Image 1 (cartoon, rainbow, N blue to C red):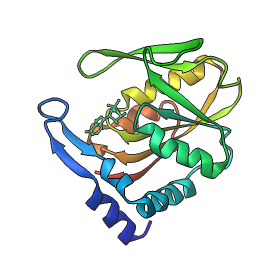
Image 2 (cartoon, rainbow, N blue to C red):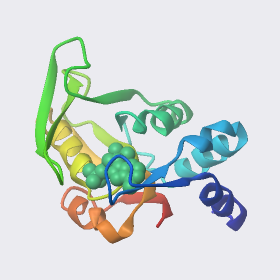
Image 3 (cartoon, helix red, strand yellow):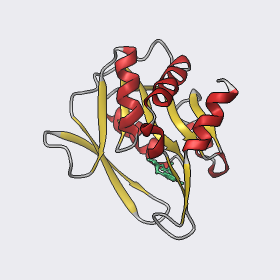
Length: 177
Ligand code: AMP
């Protein structure tokens, strides 16, 4: 990636202190999408690092839908939504998992991942890796293979990468903090 692109991305991402809870420094990516040229450059750059063997892209709610769908369109691959509990209308599969504080569930429509399909899991940000790990569980439940992970931002001090290495060692992040 060029230094200019890296600079533009880091300039656009805002740090919001104590959101959503005290002690968390929230990386706000929403200003990126005010600039359509920057958004397109990011999609181009992310796509360069993705495996050509991917059959399906799964995006994690909700910011994982943003670049997820753009990447799927660019690669001409199907896009599947992984949503928080209770949002999907049809028959679904679910995974319940622990968060740093509390618990959560994520869901996916049943039958959208055929057995043996090679999947890319995408989210905007990798922190502890708990959410992306649960997403891998959903895919494995349906017989899919998690080939690669893609994140826009990685908070490396939280060691999410180490956790996800149990699933795939192909983890691509565009911007590291
Ligand atoms: P984790 O499961 O800890 O890897 O958290 C990843 C999920 O939480 C992603 O969907 C992120 O969008 C969100 N997230 C966690 N920490 C942050 C943060 N510091 N700034 C922005 N989003 C975050």
